[in-house]
Image (cartoon, one colour):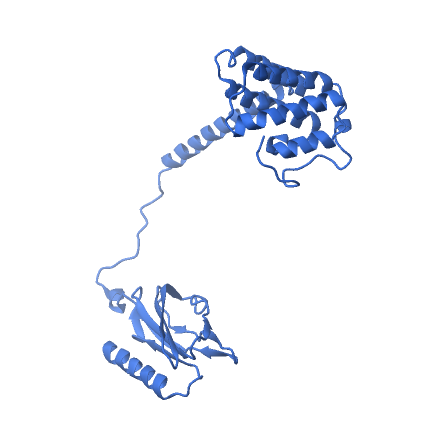
Length: 321
C-alpha cells in the first residue's frame, strides 16, 4: 500500500508538471500512512511545481498540532525549462495516544509578475497505543499495596547534611566579608608607580641585556600611572592616540615633552623589534620618573583638554602602546 501511494503521488505530480499551463504554481501533499503506533516515524512529502526561477518561502514545519513532533525536514529541488520542482521530505511522529491533524502549511511563491500562497492539504491521523486494552483484565493484577510508614532514618540524615552544608556556607560567607573589611585601601597612583619601578630596577634587566623586556614593563607601568592619575583608558590607546592625548592635554611643557619622547622612542622598540642602546633604555626610565615627579601633585582635571580624554574608538593608530 505504501509503494502504491508513493507511485500514485509521483504519477500525479508528473501529470501536473506536464499538462498544467506554464507560469502556474501547484502543490501536492502525501503521507505514507494515516495511522501509526506511538513513536513510529511517519513520512510526509510536500511537493510544489512553480515557475522557473521563482522563490519559495517555506513556513515553520513545527508550528501546527502540538501533539506532532517533527524529527527532520529535508528539501529537494529540481530545475526544468518550463518549471521548477521543490519537495520537502518531512519525518514526524507523535507520543500522545490521541488523534492529531497535519495542519495546512502556507508556502509563499514569488515571481517577477506576482506572489501567491499555496497551502498543503490537511491530513487527519490516528495514533495507536502500544498497550493493548486487554492488559486491564490480567488475572491477579492488583494496585500498589501500602506497606506501612516509611522509616525516617534517611530523612534525619538528609536534614543533618543540609544543616552541615548551610553552616559551611555561612562560615565562608562571613569570613570572606571579614577579609574584605580588613583589606587596606588602594595605594595612590604615584606610590604604586614608584614601587613598580623599584621592582623593575631590582630585576636588573638592563644589566642582563634584556632591553626590550625592560621597555615593555616600563611602558605598562607608565600607562598604568596615566590611567589611574588622569582617568583615561591609556591601556587601550595606540601610540598615535597616546601622543594626541598628551598634546591636547593641559600638562606643563616639561612632562609633556617627557611623555612625547617616551612613546615616540618606545614604539619602534616594541613593534619594530628594534634593540635600543643601553643609555636609551636608562634614559626612558629617567623620563618616566620625571613625569611622575612633575604630575603627581597636579589636579587630574587640569591635565585633560576641554573636550575630555580620548577613547580608543575616537581615533585610529598604528599600534597599541
